[in-house]
Image (cartoon, rainbow, N blue to C red; front, side, top):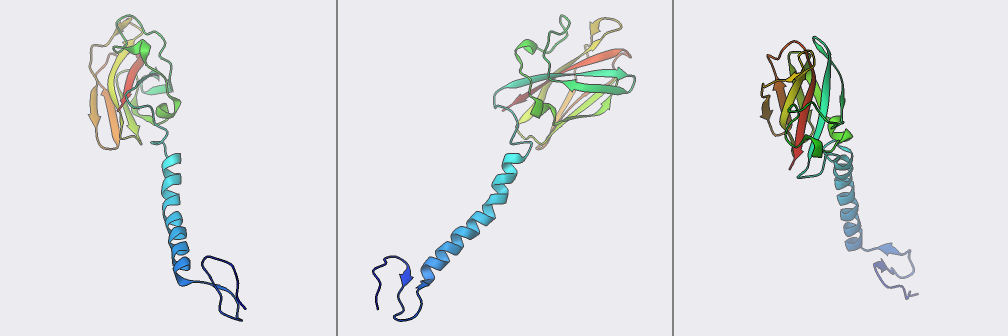
Length: 173
């Protein structure tokens, strides 16, 4: 009692039809590869680094101090800064909410700011300036920028006791 079905089904005569061993091994290999790679692909799509910004583009944002040792929320706004106060190219920078969400201030106030960008190996702080509202001038203090494989840190220290706004730039490669 034969069958005209072509492919991996083996006719065992009068017994039930079954898969040949080669087809079963190939199917198991495909299922194993899918199970192995799916978590990696899904994780890469939902990670903050995957949501990071466009290579070759710079992003600007501000941090405002609300007291001697506290800061308010960051803003992705690149609105005009006081003359001579913003980093070079400030008006041309885009805002990026995802990238902004990866920045944390570990020290923040009127005399110092330390901001850390995490979850991105391709985006780094590149510039910054600070504005003293009480005396209406920009600080000439250049921030210290430190980069590692997974973080970028920008730090201002020793500023005058009335600094209210920090202008920060992150560029991605």
